[in-house]
Image 1 (tube, one colour):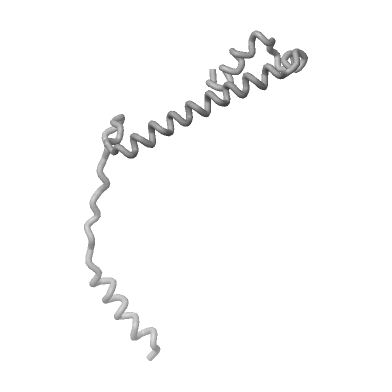
Image 2: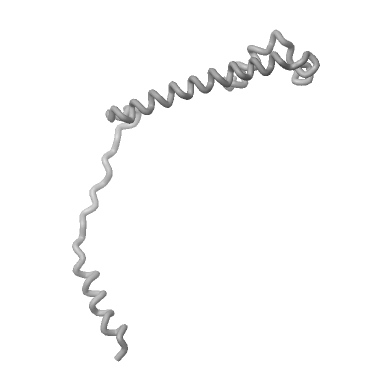
Length: 95
């Protein structure tokens, strides 16, 4: 008789004796309602503010860089100096 054959019934019995733990479904949140967790709301507000600051910075930096281009470079892009604000707004805001 091999040593493995002695262990096999013990393992089978141990698996059968394991208690069955009932699984409770996760709570369902209603669609469209914000989380009532204050920390989550705080991170959401801070994230939106950071994103807003980043977009403002990008807009200002891109406007500065575009104004530093020569008229010849702007013509290659297909815009004039007067069109720079609208062009940058379209790039940064996706319009």
